Length: 410
Image 1 (cartoon, rainbow, N blue to C red):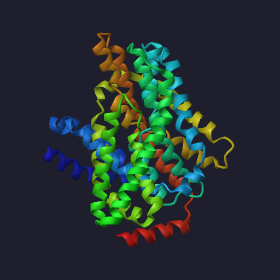
Image 2 (image 1 turned 90 degrees about the vertical axis):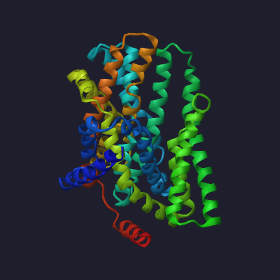
Image 3 (image 1 turned 135 degrees about the horizontal axis):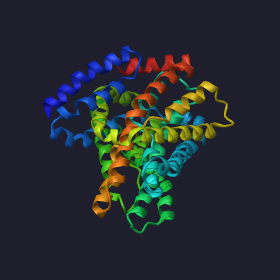
Image 4 (image 1 turned 180 degrees about the horizontal axis):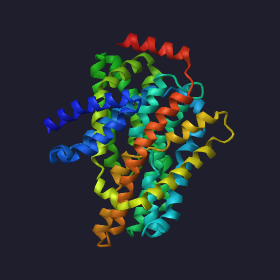
């Protein structure tokens, strides 16, 4: 396992450098590296990949929280909530309706596929948005902040709908109204617990004044425990742990801005290592042989879903003051898929196996989920990076102030 880790770090750094030299996001190269390297990774390393990916995802979500200022969220406004659900509904419903026409799936099986694909990948989107926030690109209209917050809520919504559909499909008694009501409960509870954790940690930091490195490690440890709390409460109380992690960082930023920037700087250094783990291990979840099973029909269905998701984004932005280029940026930012699809793409197949049903539809659902990662993650990341540089204006005064704070922390 240690040898695999060393190899991924060294090759990952090289691949990231090469892709950046080619003016492409480094994460594309890391995803491809993970796909190629999978046959050479030990079973012990792959079995630990879920925990390693979780830790890496927590690091980037903490950084997101430390960049989510109240002023930026106020600028983003109510459209953030629309962007969190409307595009996902458009995509999920489109795949539900078209799925049986493109693939040998029933309407219910197509619906399961639709809401697996309806989730945006925070692993791909959040690092790109943090970079734009740090560069103060789109700061005047808080566009990266809007995408960052909405993408996180989007996952909660898509996974909840998927869970309802899976319960109906498997024949379990499901209270649809209760499950839907659980969406705002999980969001509010997640944010509330995160704020409480941030308040407690802030009091402890002020009382004992540990070094910044120790504060960073404490925050990462608490965040991992918050995710563990979600697993303990699962089936009893809806709780969005990843939102809780972001809320923790947001609270510290609001109360102690200098401390938040200092912690974000430390996390930025950890992210160099964590990003290699996250994207290579997400890539390693992709089975190309399974993807080939979906064929061109599966790819066509994915494109239809992404097209309707883009229409949903444009509808959410109708009547806004955004320029045409800024709207393009918002649209392509909602394309990447990876994290959720890798995590739950195989769940329908497992349920079908347990129920003794024909597993062919489950294999097909998994295949399309894999193709969605291969197609949208690199393409979406590349177009988002391009659109951000091309269409988002930089607030030079804020950028200079940010650099001054960053230099003082380092």
